[in-house]
Length: 334
Image (cartoon, rainbow, N blue to C red; front, side, top):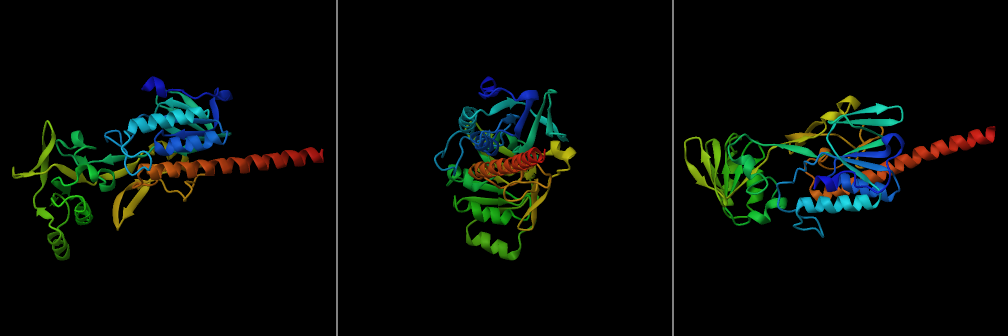
């Protein structure tokens, strides 16, 4: 796979390894942006670290025309499409990005450097999961986070919801749509209010006190949740809401720092702020996908990449037009 991904574009490198646009991140958002810019006849480099967030999932869902497609297949198709428009794709991890006289420079972990007139960041996010034995191994299969991404696959199973914050009751009621067998494990979350207990009881959601210590599994997958007192509660899938943290540390030299994001008054993680087209507070830098939209699904991230790509192209056109006017004015004056 790596050999296929590395430098598969058809155009030669621009002089000095400088591109119109350097796209950092080769997921749905980054590749959609690259296709948009490639079709606009821009020189584009995509730097991909090869760690897509949805790699553990068996398929991409709620993506019209691609329902159930394995994530790796979707990205491989996207890379081929981008390469068909002259986009170059290089494997590597960007460790820093800074401003240069002609735009921006990015440095990779292996020491390689590239330059671009504009930057488009689509590096996604990291799920910071609770530290429970067995949880990481089941992440993306029996341990899930989004009912719209995974609910159908675990429908009618015994689903547990791990409470880690004040939105746990909402999550339990949400997952109840996919199964009549839902248990809310209070774990480290807050005690539900009396009205919330009534809602859970009315919907047939069981509530279990006590801290969860580990997940039980066999060769077929998850079988239960083990509490601190040793009790094992049967459970075939566990919904977990971890902290969502943007992969954006390399943007610090540009003054771009992720800020905390809230949902229903609860902090769910950190993201890079941007306007609806993906433009950040730093001129020349755009973001798209989960790095700025923590709850965006794959189809939304791809759409955001298209919007950001079009915005970057428009910005370059405006700059080129100003320069052309200045040259024309100077020529007439002389």
